[in-house]
Length: 206
Image 1 (cartoon, rainbow, N blue to C red):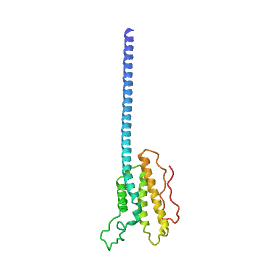
Image 2 (image 1 turned 90 degrees about the horizontal axis):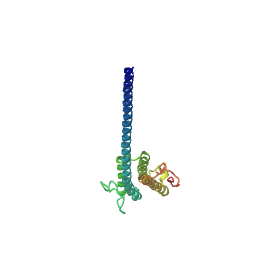
Image 3 (image 1 turned 60 degrees about the vertical axis):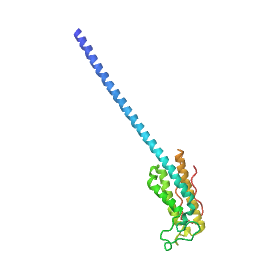
Image 4 (image 1 turned 180 degrees about the horizontal axis):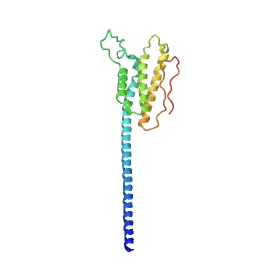
């Protein structure tokens, strides 16, 4: 009888110890898994924060290019002109006509589009790409062909220039709000330059 009680107690102790060991292993595994998940989440958060900081730095750089483009926007029609009030330069007169500041500014924007715009969130980089396309279209529109009825008058070309300036300012404000971590302006399709009406394109309200 005593032996049976002893064996029963021993068996209970062994089973209890085994259960405690198993419980400890399960708890340890859960703890390790939780720690790994926390570490993974911390690493993800760190990478996201670094990417966001890099994107804001990129936006600051792009704002500098936009400021230069805005400064020379009025010279977009001077592609075939020399600086100042010199006469028109043609290929017959000059092998390498001087390049106006507006053209250099536009070329710089294209380079930034290729090298930096992809670092921005998609919604913001898309506005940048739309702006570069709009500037290219405006550059062409300033010297309209015979079939460009919508841009034949000074009034429609002036309205097109105002539209471009407004969209450029819209992209600038978009980048500024992004850098400041504020709510970005709502999306707006870029203006259609080749249209006959003189109603200005207006950016959406914040």
